Length: 229
Image (cartoon, rainbow, N blue to C red):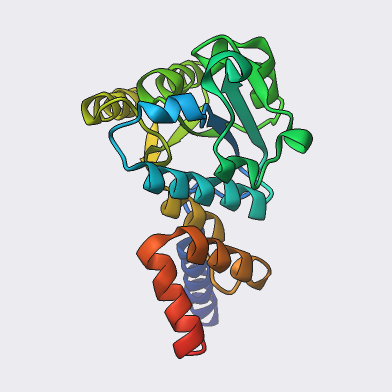
């Protein structure tokens, strides 16, 4: 009888432990690298599938989240000085050129640039998260290339954009068919936070959302000031 009770207790403990284990498909601050690609003025001029203010805010949430959680991050540009221009202020706010040293390319596919490819793979992460402009060219290229080399690829679709809704949507569909995982900027942030009891990142995360999170941010501001939460 005693042996049976112990067996049942062990089974219950094992079940509870299993139930609390998160899926390995979820992102954590330590299991992936983020690559921000071509969030530049010229690329933004022709982006039509998403409002530019929304795109900039979403990009800020992604860049800010990676900074808060110390995610290994690569910022890469294309023809920065000769054509595409400077990165969005929402990127440089968290990753200034002086300290980040953006990797400028001539290739449309980041994966085909020797320096960019080395910077990404040297992070030593098998999960790669991508966001940038344009989805159909500068995100599809590295996404499909990384997948073919065995990487697990995530694409932040609302921090990416293209010349039309059709171009963006078809690019996302193509990547998903190849095995990429689509997600949003807020989803990325909250997946890294995961638990509001993580007090060391609670204030930076909620401050980031209050500044760039639109209606969600206003809701947090209201809760903090009116409900004292």
